[in-house]
Structures are given as structure tokens and as C-alpha cells.
Length: 274
Image 1 (cartoon, rainbow, N blue to C red):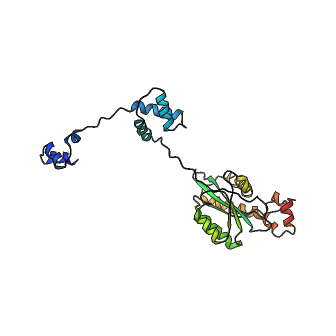
Image 2: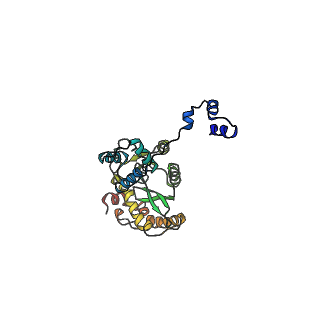
């Protein structure tokens, strides 16, 4: 503090030093009295451990009901020092979703479905997968794997798939942050693609991709221990080829997805499931 420095090294009196800095001598001499908060700390910690769902307000109410007279501001300070004040993430408001009924498209590239999955490597580090299928024949179009898959990466994968087989008329997705982003919305609008968002909490409205996710998890994610992302990618690539070209699909009459594209009775198979 400058006042102490002047008094110590310039031989000023306290009155002179305070006058020099226009500081009240009472303020200079004031010594804060630190209160003993140990009782409050122990009590708040005990309540927080035994009642983890109680917030600050309920703890204050309980203390008052028990006869404690501590000021709520003092309790609040201690509550924050103990890092018990968890930020409440506001619920994002979504527009009303009225998705079209889930029907089997009559040809490829009518409707694609997209969804994310999460798993972890043997080290415990989590990774994500972006799964894209064609609803017509349930063909896997892409399974992108990485630690992070933001909206820009989703767009990049869609463009890559489009180079091989063209773009769909619509893409069915849930309400994840990547799927409701402005960037994906602008990309879809520029390519004249409808984004069909299902209702929040209604995964059955995206049943084709949800059923695929289950198969992918049972056949790959739950079947192996992965050392690295390359392990996940290599095993997934081999499995995708088998799924699309060799694995019988029960909803396609027992034929693989790509065989349906050349099957003479593909439409009737889809509609009747025989």
C-alpha cells in the first residue's frame, strides 16, 4: 500500500501520508475482523453431502427453520466458496415440430436419416460417430468418427456423400445443437433440402436410424475394445461393407441394402416386408 510505503521509507507521519493521498485516517487504520465461519462451513457441507439435490435457497430455509440466525448473504458467500453453486443451463426453446409420418420412400435419395452416437476408447476418452443412412434401402452412407463433430464437419460429410450419390430431398434429424445450427440450415436451404426435425423426446419418429444405431452398437461398439480412433474407423469400414453388401436385412425381405437397388421387386418388398 502506498501510504505504508511513504511512512516507512519517506519518514512521513500517518497524518501526512493520508493527507497526501486524500485518505481518511480511520480507513487507513481499519483492520477487518474476520469472522469464524467454521461452523457454517461444516454445516453447509454436511447438508450438501446428505441432500445433493438441495440448492442454496432450500439450505437457507432449512437453517432458518432450525433456528440459525446467520445472514443469508454470509451463507451465500460460503456456499460459493465451497463451489456448490452450479450454473443452471437454460432450456433452449425449440419451435413446434410437426414431422411428417415415418414412411418408406419409394426410391433412393428421397429421405436420409442422421444421428450421433457416443462411445469411448479403452483409455476412457470419449468419441462420437455421425451416422447417415438412406431410408429407402437402409444403406449406410457414412459413419464419421472423431472426438468432436461440429456442424461444419456434418456439412463436410454430407458434401462428401453427395459427390458419390447426389443429395436427398429431405434429411430427418433430431434437435441436437449440430442439427439445429444456422450453418446446417443455410446449407440445406442453398441445396433445396428440407430438414425434418423430429419432436424432442420422440426418437421413434426417427426409427430407421435409431434401429441402425442399435445394430451398430451391438455389432461394433460393444463388441471391441478400441485403442485409438483408427481402430474404430478400420473396424467400422469393414463392417459397413458387410452391412451394405452381404448382411441380410429383415425389413428388406432378407437381402442386403445394395442388392435392393437392382432387385426387380424392390418396391413391393419395401411396402410389404416380404
